[in-house]
Image 1: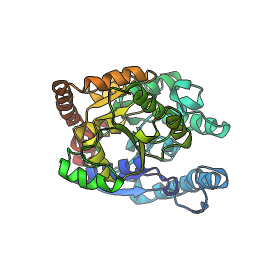
Image 2: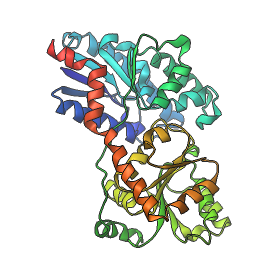
Image 3: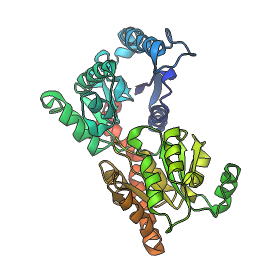
Length: 384
């Protein structure tokens, strides 16, 4: 059995989708499948241009939506790719328009979220506003995604939202299932001696107490809540907040300065993986007050490193945490501060951490790959 994964356009630098594609590729290889990855060629695109703005964006559109569909047509018309022993999988739902060029019964797709689609349709709670062009693109993606015969959604929440948006209950009589993401890298509780050495170059001592946030600067990540939470904890806790991911935006740093908290805020731009594991392992708590997600990988990454988690009470966060987190209203920093203070009780803290270790057992690569094999009937096809 040959599995052909349809990956993302390289200049877009979709890191999480790249990791997901490679994770599937490794899992299917271990299951005895022959793997190939097809991606849109960089033909019109120019490396020096921003692929998300102006001319760079539209040249990328030509590569993705004009050139690559022609490539797909040509490749699939060849004799070798007509065989029933070839299965196609689109790794990113934003590439759903490619489905119409693939054989319906021998292809599938993963839907990671419908945030951009909902934002384009005017749902304010997606926190993903769209331009006029974005609205057209997302509606086109939804139209093609809704036609998918076989699909994996990464959470029940994403599945529910997609069904809600799909025209005329188009999901009925189709193979749409929930298959949770697995870990896309190793996460584990790092010993203090090791994380102390890794964090020292950043001016962090292993004895420091800090709250950790991991993520981008997108508004839906709700970074501001951690600054407000820190203010609520004044006089009760004297540690600091570490933002790992995108550089802390100037407006947020100015806000921390206005509150007299700038000395208790630090930013670490896109730390390498071992440093990220060190941060998760060393933090007093991992705080994830996101306003909208499709899955929420950092939740289980933190749990795998032995960090107690405080997260938004909005779905899919409770679904992913498995109840092994404290959940609170992401618009109420007082509740997040109170949740953090509960962790001062060592017995409660340790119990939450142990529940986290139990929860992460649901997200093994083996379980995820088994789910895909079952969804796409690949075992059955391989035997035939």
